[in-house]
Length: 240
Image (tube, rainbow, N blue to C red; front, side, top):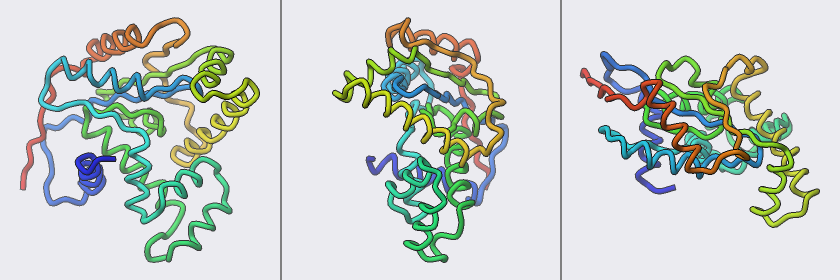
């Protein structure tokens, strides 16, 4: 991840501790993309950000996915792979390994991991002009009015074929990958949102098997504009 984005991520994580407050500030706009395994999402988000930037505005749209884990790991003094493994597998033994590897002063509890991730994602969403791919963004940002929650879906056979072509694997390997990744994502959401995470409704559900990427981006852009996400965004008024 480049240094400019890393500085931004760190600033957003610590902003709640800064010595100023804002007035007349509305959180968002934020777009959260959830997806079934094999539907991708990041490439769509990147193209969408380019198209949304053409609409004008004082801020450019950012796409965040793996950067959230990387910055959270840095804040927790953890290796990104250890944090990713803990969140994916949901194994208490892995958490115990983490506690063994890091002193109590640097790393206190499972709750701290979850709070760091939630605070970081909530901060991105609140700051606005952000497209969050996965990471339970649609759950954490559900109280933000200027938001758009999207679900990318496709038939199972279509997703298997996409994975086979993209990763050069056979059908059995692609099917195993879908099963494994679905479990990992459920564990991640459980860590972040707990058991009660099914009450969030999506604004838009798109079947990737029926549309090409250009058509999908145009639809999302239209809905975002209809919901007022592309209106002139009020800048923060900082009061020291």
